[in-house]
Image (cartoon, rainbow, N blue to C red; front, side, top):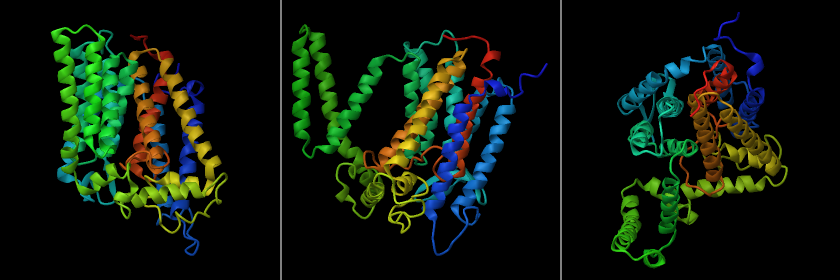
Length: 425
């Protein structure tokens, strides 16, 4: 009889694996295209350029996959909390031992081998949340359980903000989608989306007095729609006053941010605010994607990317290279691969036999969905530039390794679901 730690080939979700390798390979070719210089004529396998380095990361990622798939399916559940604590310690040490780049201390390591603890802490936080929330008695509709879940989620967020790395910290809030699936009351999400809408309105409207008038009118209408009891009048009045205070406090908070972060936010509403900085990035990104037309200019034929008009075109803005050289059709293919991957992961999450695996699966869906949506929205000017890579596509060892571990731990869980004890809640 074969041991439980063996890889069960027949139960591996090969559709997900194929999509993963498709994205990795298309990303690798696009990384080469982003740094291609026709005069230098360097091979895609040249380790002196990004594509060669990325090939090394891909090779090591395959090694990581083999280790994960060969491990016992219970390993990740048993070590969920220790893994989480290890990366919390690494996040604590990063500001003291890390290397500073552009005012941020994001990575630690020795020599040229460096890792971003914030990237790896994503799968560690997902494992910890799954472990904490797997108990049959865990109920997200109750405040004490909400505090436990939010405590696990917000600890790495706070440490990452101190680096400071706002973009990576934002990713962790995508796990609220998993919270919703597991029963977090809807009013939290209504409040959250309402605050986001109010924030966008406050930033986009030059004179806040119009927004104040709108909040006041809505508050009065809500008071008169129901029974006008003293408690109701006081409650809605306090909410209205709180929203007005929040509206005016945004200007103060933003004024305390570094100038480049202020520009990243405000350029969303007016690209001319920082035309040679963040505004330039977004404008050139949209030009590159738009110039690709229906079928693109052809592989290695892009001009916007070749002449470095688009910044960070091999990392955060890698989608620009794809859009310019392969056009709308090529972009559609890659977007379809991501949508297909997310669809498969939702199916896999729903067929799990225990709560731990299901919760972790929805964490994977949440994180990948957030990265996918925000990265593309960023490159076409629908979201501020926050430095979020496109999963499996953007250049970088930490990014590729962390996403690979995040995904294949779940693929391993899914392949071993027949061996799991049924503990669904």
